Length: 153
Image (cartoon, rainbow, N blue to C red; front, side, top):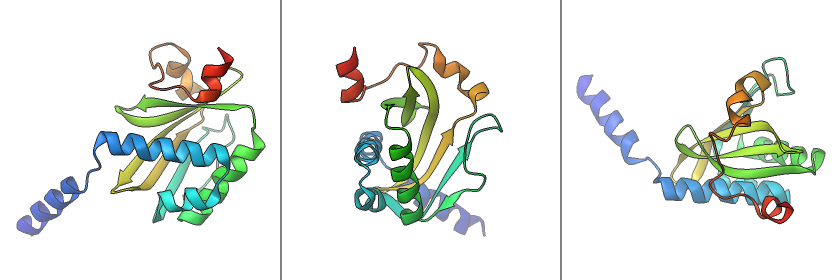
């Protein structure tokens, strides 16, 4: 059993996506999300992917995880249409490439991603304003602001 466990641990480490590739995947997700391109979004997700939101009862969020590439892609495409004035910034989230969504300059969502290979396995979206307070300071500057954010400054 111990040998089998060590083998599984080594195998999972070997599947870790390099940071630069993770950043490319997050950027591709951002672009497909902004374009509401469901097919591109579906291709970015693992077929068993999940997306989880945390609104903490203070902000809207799905009560249950969204499962499956198609369901997640449609959810995000619908969200892009519902909030056309959303600015999406590429940032470091928990030491990894992630996204921050702002509305009227206020951070409303922070998203962290787990990738494997070239696909997204899981998205964690924090929408709870209490948990977003650290993101309202300049302690988390964007790595690369979106073109729309650059044009408005």
